[in-house]
Each structure stands twice: as structure tokens, then as C-alpha cells.
Image (cartoon, rainbow, N blue to C red; front, side):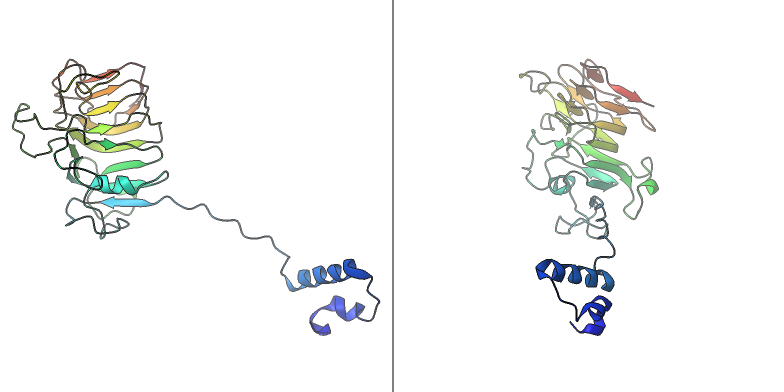
Length: 264
């Protein structure tokens, strides 16, 4: 380092240095003069959670899902990618739980499984850049258990439908489902404990407390208890814009073993 690059060295160059401590002090002062140590490192900005886009009009799941133009075709594929902090925006259309990553066609056990920390929003046209721009009433996103897409009116031909269209079991309130119609579940299998496969064909929720908002749960069948929604824990049910649990076949539309948190 040249003397004229550091005033401290320039003024003290001819003084006798007293060991390593003096050398370290000179180096520290020079670095401070040059600005290296004048300011602390800039704080690291928190990373915004990833938004995955789903649009039934896409030809397949080959897109990365990070824009509407490269959206995934199937909701299950986006769910498989999503981790805590992510959101999934779903365009209008009908989505089936046996389609997408990790699924087997016509498997009645297929279900849309909610995840802690992941918020799934329906009601998009497929062009929005802000969540506030969606219109749940105009852009209806349907989660359907009609796996073979051959149902007839009044629950006809539904023997091969999904047992539970949506499952929120074991989740907490950070698992969010908002802005969907849930239909065509058929919980007719019986057996098991807690909520077996003869209830909760629309939404099955065993020991979970997901946040359910702006949902229309309709046209589901159960051979035992609630066809629309069965919960064994205190789910947060936000009922805004749409009716929850209508036109079900079962003893009740909604059944809960603990007091749910209801929001109007």
C-alpha cells in the first residue's frame, strides 16, 4: 500500500511500530478511511413466497407454473410443488383430484390435500397480477369428485366418484382454501374411525383447523354423517359471498365435533 493512499500511514510511516497490535491498528484505521468498515452490511430482505398459477386451459403441466402464461394445468401438480409460504392461484374451470403429479386416474382415494402455510385461491380469469383483482362469482373454480366425468342429475352414476374431494386433516389455520365450489364427492365406503369414508365427501377434516373461505360446498353424497363438510377439530369457516354446504345427501350438510370459528 502506498503512503499517500492512507493518511494514517503517511503521518506515522516513520514511527517505530510496536509489534502486531500496532500493525493491526494501522490496517483497521486505513480500512475505515477507505470506507470498507464505515457501514454495516445491508439487511437481507425477506423472500416473498412463490405464487404458482393453475389454468385448466393450459395443454399440460410442462410450464414452470410461475406465470399465467406458463401455468400448470392441474392443481395437484402445483400442490406438489408448493411449500410453506407459497400461494396457488387457480383460474376458472373444473379440477379433479385424480389428475396431476402423483395421482392415479379414477382412484377414489384421490383428494386435494391442504398444506400448512400454503394458501389456495380460486376465482381468477387468468390475467390478474393482484389477489384483489380476482372475482370469485364471475370466475368459478370447481373442485369436483366426478373422476370419470360421467355423473347424471340427482347423484346418478356417482359410484366411482372421489370419497373426499378436499382433505384438511392435521392442518392448522395457515392452510387456506378460498374461493371454490366443491362438489361431487361420494363418501359411501364406511368403516374406519373418526371420520371414515362414509362422511365428509366434500371436505374431510380430522383433527385439523384449516381456514375455509368463500366456498360453495354443494352436490355431495355421504351414506352416514355430513356429506358437505365433516370436521373433528375447530376449523375456521369464513362465509362471505357464497353459501357453505347446500344440496347435500347425508344426515347433515356440515358436521363438527368441536366448535368451529365462524366468520361472516
